[in-house]
Length: 573
Image 1 (cartoon, rainbow, N blue to C red):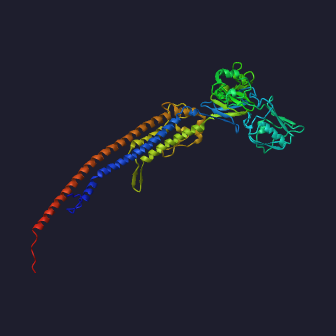
Image 2 (cartoon, helix red, strand yellow; image 1 turned 135 degrees about the vertical axis):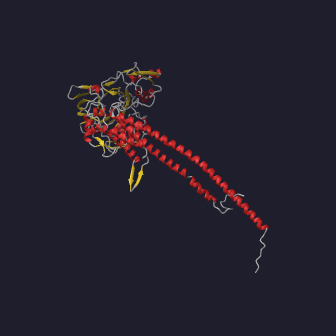
Image 3 (spheres, rainbow, N blue to C red; image 1 turned 135 degrees about the horizontal axis):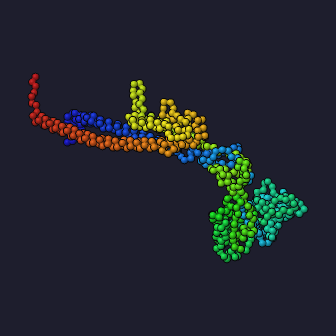
């Protein structure tokens, strides 16, 4: 028979009794858990402090950045200037007057125009469908106007049908024709002036065929109409030249600025060839001018520099008119003066020390004008880094103060989480001493933060810029002294702060390790106590169960005796 129900035989609630005893016995565990929680909270506070120390170290490192206090800014004194001045660290400060008389320009080689075959080989527009007409601009359907009469066309129309439509619309007052020798369309008005176009025209027929008003009785296309097809192979691109030799040769090549370019007219399109030239490293940009039906090569850099094209006779460059038939439009060098001196020359529109001699100064110009460029110390950038340091420094000091302070109110003393850790409190005072202290061995006028208008807020460890004007003047006029104060190796303020932050960072990590290990030890203690308590509870439970069992047996024997020897005594009245 089980006696797990408390007091079943004895009437004594021993389970509650055991729970009360165990509750008293677990007091050490509760105390250890409180200690463990405190350690966890302290560890979390130290992790937060570690983050703030890391930010301070970053801010201190920024103060030590090479060139910070020799940083320069360059601006044009001309309002709304489009020039772009720039000054590297150490650029001599001052004002520089640049008078630009001429801008640099790129050289280009323009190939022969009108490379394409005529629209037709005969004076006929019957077989020339508008949708496939090889003009520079693709034609669009709609309406256009001739002598005030509207002409409607569709892309399925032939050129001959359009000519008929013009004659019909104008009552034959205007007739149209095509000449395959000149590769032009002519509109003839007889004795009357031909007037083309209207504001509500919807087709581009007139512009695509290069027809424009001239005040005459006859209007002809201003240039040849047939152009190359840049997307098909060069052999079928409608080049108006004998391609037989190149078609038979297959693989060929030419040279641009000494760079060999391979091609095959049977497989390469003009577009593909132009892309290959642009990717070749020849230093030129190749393009197709559809309006003039020609290929143009332009240098990638400005300046009076040539473009050399080398190709055997009968080669593709000759067919494209980029050798003997080409026109070299010379580039130009920029011409300018500095502070009223003699004329200087630059191949680029970025005027730099190579051309004007001022180390670190470059000015990208895009207009012919005279402007004053002022170079000064970049005090805003310097001040921003100093302000960042002050903010990070104050963040660390404030965090240490908040987590180590002891306060008293209404007779009650309250200690912050890390109040008992005197080493952390010493970190704050040591940081203050370093920041407040003088950097020895300096010959300049700046050897402590106070010389920069920076000091502590009264009664606190918090730094502040108390005199902004003093700081700005020091950064502007004594930048070298400021740099020496902060950045002198080993002894400068940056070096001292960095070294100490590294030290306390290591100590912080050690404290975190200690708290973590302490909690491991506490866990071990709790486990040991819990095992002992579990054993004690089991022993007590077993003892009370044995008691219940014994009492149950006694009660059973008593009941048996009562039944065996019933009470026969009677009461007489």
